[in-house]
Length: 87
Image 1 (cartoon, rainbow, N blue to C red):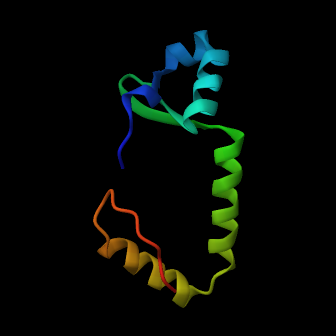
Image 2 (cartoon, rainbow, N blue to C red):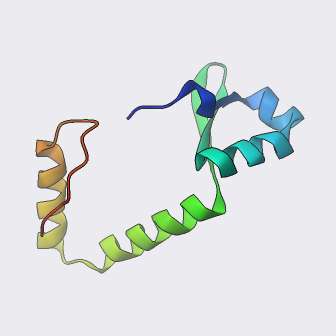
């Protein structure tokens, strides 16, 4: 997964400047919060959260065999390339 350095904030920055971090998450879709230079949390904009929620609900509605096909398809794709998944 590619993470832009623009989307990374420190835990202390998040505590001190929550409003600015929230606005950054809105602009970028999500930001990654580091604590002691290690990933600690992700702050999603509500738009990104809703988009992901729809995808999760769809995946939860699929049968096991269909999920297996999707997982196998993802394993065979090159990282960073996006292509439509087929079921």
